[in-house]
Length: 270
Image (cartoon, rainbow, N blue to C red; front, side, top):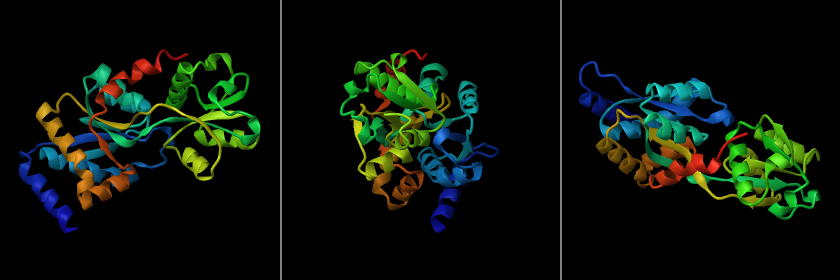
């Protein structure tokens, strides 16, 4: 309690009269099940770390819909964006003048999972099999499609069923509606699948997960201070607790080039 009061007081001393708080928009994608109040409770500690680094108050807003997230970046209404799926922050950088700050560790991967009864042992065995994926517009479907493309599997030429949520991928495999499917490494489905010792055919290359970007109003000196504060979080018990609350191990401040290359790797979408 006393630490929060001291931090709030320090921030107030640095704000000019009438200055408005900066805004950090958070999107957990379609996999998030939190309401606005819970998102604020979950991420305000991280906003405070950012605010402490630049001596300015930072408030959290929940970008529930992707259209809201995109519009907020386009209009520069959001000073910071922490979002998954990662292609949205990548577009913020490419299209709307945002700058990379960090991404979360561990990185994200596409996991190709299969039932043991499928007879699938490697990626090449997917040809001619029944494959289940999240809906075509989902980031993880784009991710898996690009990975499989590079390995010689064109999903456009395979028997693919699309489902609304990643949980349905496991359901399809368990009930023999499909032979293999793609899920995100950071999803609850993937974590449980691996904990249960079930078959993982392939783990893709890693890509930046849950990137944090800064709008054009945040100068380079401020961005440098924020990166330094984010990188140092595991060294502070209080900030390490913030990481745990957010649900990540640490921040990677060196993955900007990989995020910049993400959209090109994903390629044109059908």
